[in-house]
Length: 260
Image 1 (cartoon, rainbow, N blue to C red):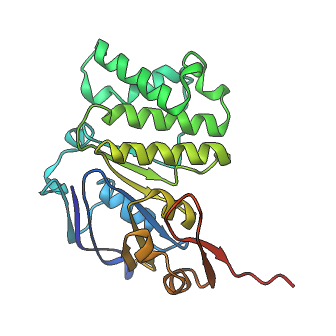
Image 2 (image 1 turned 90 degrees about the vertical axis):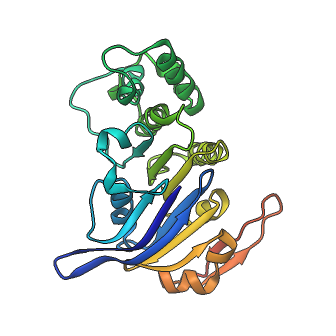
């Protein structure tokens, strides 16, 4: 579904990405991890066509991303960004309906309304549907925005979902629920790419992990292949211990921090 080949990006003389390549199939969840400044957000913006690069290429379903108009991309690709600034107060239902704008001209169909209801139910915001967005907590607002992007591609087989640090501002319960939802979307055939700061979340919920350092790929593959003591030390500069959990089969890490 997504092929990235020798992708590089620089600002002035500084390379923010350097020869990044990977492939992600439909029905897979990719977690992009790395320290601050590793190039995670730059890569996501290139994958979303928010920025473009002259070095390397990005293919979506075999077509160069440059061949898609933003209007065409909006019908099957949704992006959950970190910032959601609204100058006008909308209700929750009105915001989620915005996700369907690429699919109708003037008035939403019954099909569109069914989808926004399903998206609100899946994200746990259906009870807020008539409340104004600004009256919600930060975590509740994040879930409303997630419902919006899910509604955008809900009925698009092979759709693409990009999540930029989707667990920020959420408590422990809703962090797990958001990532479980991302996992279920991948299981339904969507390609999901998430930027995550928590390595254990990436290991537990993603099919593939891309580990970056200073714009370069440290490792790409399954969580077992990527989340190793050596790779984590190389990317983050910290020693860790690998742990095993009884109820899940993935590598989890515990930092070896000495407190004096």
